Length: 436
Image (cartoon, rainbow, N blue to C red; front, top):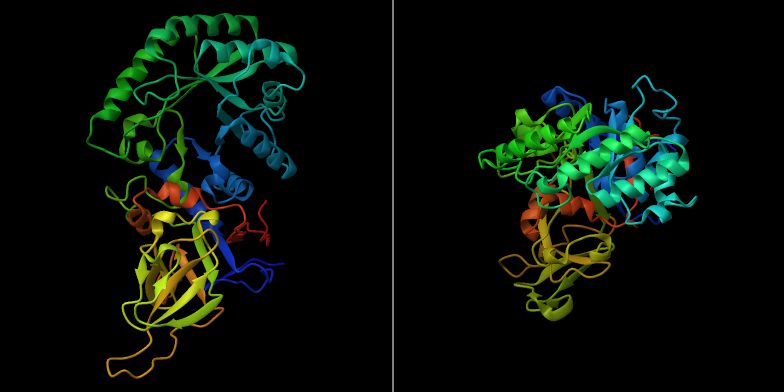
């Protein structure tokens, strides 16, 4: 099975007959975005592939990012980190323990499960599984350190650890008043050989506001934390603070490593500051579906649950088999933009669990003469993505969807449901239309 692109979009000839909807993922766009962000940052970069690579598919995106030069992969949840390690092993990607020269990519997971040291030391402990998988792990509290050290002792290994400090997000991370005691405990664990503190890191809360002054405050707190850590005799070799917003708009936050998240997928952290297109990024996801029914309805006819939209004239409408169970926000009711051919239209009525109705235009002209349906069953609709190379389509952007739904572009792509097949195109796609 081959996977190709044409001037008018991806080749759908190999899709299974049941696949009336699909998310077309352009791996070459992902690689382009990674290279562009790396060039901007000028330091090594981590590809953040948490949440199933922001809905784009964990395995293909991780491997594409590595091929584009990423030296780290990052996920939030430990379960996903273990899945990622298995995918990398299957693909033949070397682990750091197998290639200690530093050339092998490393995987960081930063949300650990809650457990006491006794549970952590058990053979079936998730923390011991993480150590077996050769993962880097993050801690922010003394209880997390105690559990991880217990797992490392039981595993007879040294845990590679990143200390996260709270520099102003008030989310995860060690508070300043707790840091001296935590740093001292880390020093004891290092001396014992249970852990190796390889990283010191934090996260910016307002990096997408270049002139807010918030990032500068984060940097002051980070340097204060760094002094406390150094005074305890710890010497982490990797300092990282900047995600996409930080690496784009705050050069002083780039440090030793940057974490490329939303930008890797072709989207700006804040389109009101600078759009993805202005940054030179290319959208990686295109959500498509086929019309499964076209019908004519009379003026005044209500559409979908609750009758919240009624036809202003005799209209043609089309049925698209995507709904909120697929990740289409219910907030898109009577507002979500949809492209079909050269026409831009919108969802009318409420978004349903499995389907939406779109307006296809008037069924009569000004004289009352009937107009033919402007679209047919089987025609491709595009909810969001990038237009074709010839510019002959009307294609809404993820940012337009976010604006219509009162949310951010991160949520639009990340919430895309698992039953939507991901269709990989571009370099390295390998012809696999199935979700990995």
